[in-house]
Length: 162
Image 1 (spheres, rainbow, N blue to C red):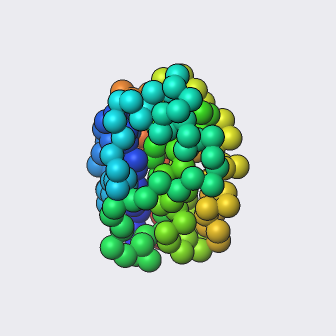
Image 2: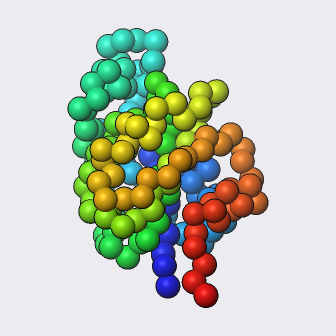
């Protein structure tokens, strides 16, 4: 039996809510990606070029430290990875998460929340961090997306065993 993981990073709670709804809708395990140093409001001020998030996003090699790991990633065939869109892509902490594991043979599906931006260059930026994985095109959802919408979307990536 194949298993699915919904892993997510949420700076303000919006992506957390969406991720929990998705995990419940498809019967997946849920994992929150928690930074060693939590982000403050000042850290998230995208109007300040010296804010932590601005500095991280301007340095594509930035890999913010994570204080927790998935116990056994080998048990999962699919990993849905959720995050807020920052600067038209995934926050670099998502690269940190993906690079911690051997994702060979796994389907990796990004999904995001945003105030209005689309997925932008997300897959191009995540691809090097997903060595050996089948990285699929992701989707941005409104924070109020309903369970039925998320389930219908996610089922495209879940192969039924007959």
